[in-house]
Image (cartoon, rainbow, N blue to C red; front, side, top):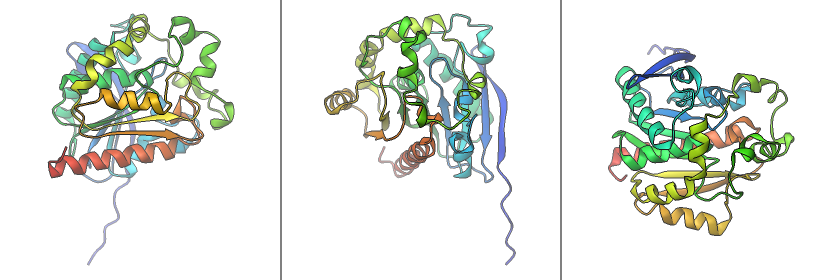
Length: 293
């Protein structure tokens, strides 16, 4: 029998997605084998970009590379008000409008590329908010599940624009410097962006919005809180309240990542977190195939 070596995975490349008249930029990475196991769509946090998921300072922090090595297609999208869409949306969009725009972008994406067993959303920080609303609104029928980091149901500090932009934001967003590979902050220019005004305004109201939408989510959800997470309450009682809100979800998993700060995908423990997230995606994929999701 002749054994053929598998082809090398295609590296990440820039693409555009049309979303009801809005053009979003994104990074696409495809695995060597086809069909892919599933498509993971990654949504960055406030003040970041799609490069957050592609390891700007160390190869072990690239979610896109790891996902494709395990047979997943991976797409990191510049959310509305970031990347190319900044021209059309200089003030950005609120959470509900972002969810609608991203759902339209996902329809464009799935019409063009193989999604394998379905679509899985991986979201960080503010990106978790439209991701959770997409799940609540049911606008992506092939949605397998969600993996959310750096986002919860209750702020640990009163949110304000000053917190998002001032000196206090360093501790809230990063935590101890030792958690990140050398060069992380020099590489920041490739991934850091201004936070759109409408996004900031909506962030203040998130606890009330989450309480309203959480009970309508009907796919599995996993939340990860970093050891040094400072934006969100994640003690035992807060996690119990979070889980109780997701009353219709078939499965809710909560986890804590040791040795990590809020920007979990940029630190030394990024690979550990990404492996767990992809493991959860695999579990959601199997559950959907078995009809138990």
